Image 1 (tube, helix red, strand yellow):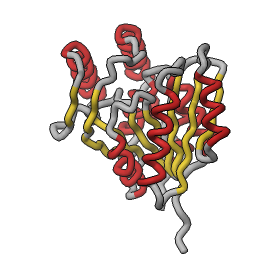
Image 2 (cartoon, helix red, strand yellow):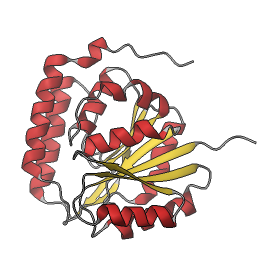
Image 3 (cartoon, rainbow, N blue to C red):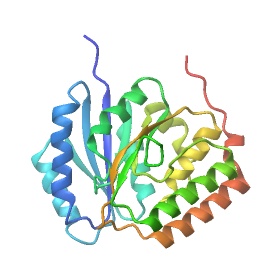
Image 4 (cartoon, rainbow, N blue to C red):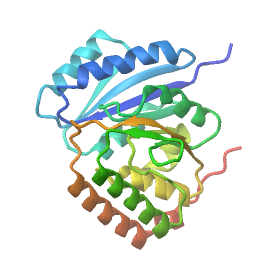
Amino acid sequence: MQKKLSVEIVIPVYNEEVELKEHVLKLHQFCKENLKVYNWHITIADNASTDSTPRIGEQLAHEYKEIDVLRLNQKGRGRAVKTAWKESGADICCYMDIDLSTDLKHLPQLISAIENGSDIAIGSRLLPQSKVSNRTAMREFISRSLNILIQLMFFVSISDVQCGFKGVSKNTVKELLPHIKDNEWFMDSELLIVGEKSRYTISQIPLVWRDNPGSTVRVLPTVMGDMKGLLRLLIQQPWKKLHRPVHL
């Protein structure tokens, strides 16, 4: 009998006491019904929350054997995701935002893309087949402008670097993740830019995505962080020092 692949689903959180329980349980139920062919696990990666998030997470972990909590003492979504992925050891590691803006029906597609040979799989809101609703014109403009800028600066084909819905293989965690320096919101962009420039294969999945009006993402500081990160990558070009192992 063939051994089931292990799948780690990381949810990075900071002060998400309002949505945490409802959305984690929704994800847990979806996994029970739709990921039966995998050994799946959910990790709540709490990066220094100051509200009731840690307590709620611990309660969920106590009640459900498939749920654990990773508590970090420093803020940073990128730090939370990277730490959880490195500690997991799963065959396939994913992460998604707690607001569940991405329709969960895409989770099996994300996992399958890695299972079928991709090093990285991402959800994209900017592909022609994607269906995005409830998003402001300003956020749409900023997102599209940033992604076009990245494509022009680095000659990459990634359509949506920022969407909080991504998966990577175990080899990618081991080989590529140690070279990703950002610990904040730019981590996603850095992973994809350095990954594609280093010839890691990336699958892009069109999404049904609904913007969450209660999102805690602060647009201006995030964009400023992205600009600093892009300038750093342009100067350092870390992919020139990366020698990707060949997997037979």
